[in-house]
Length: 133
Image (cartoon, rainbow, N blue to C red; front, side, top):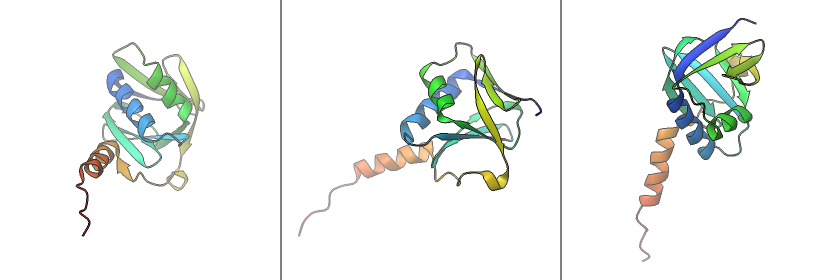
């Protein structure tokens, strides 16, 4: 397998991982897709974007273990390199098994972007109660 590396800001990655882990508690597969300088992380029906640079294959799939570990124990450095090599995805010394997905292997497309989902939940809470006749 070839080696691929993306470079991104650690604080942005940590923010996205924490947000996704709160919104999608029962999903076990994370997908990472990169295009035109944007890394999209998808978990269940929610996705979020962050700026990144480098080379990345189509879409990578990893277990939730990766998201949970990095959200709970953020990396200290200001810049993080995500590296795919020999069937594993690395973030500094932490690594998990990964799969490079073909278009036909992708899990269903995300239903809502994390920001849209927060706005939707807020609008549902702010909805006035209907008056009884």
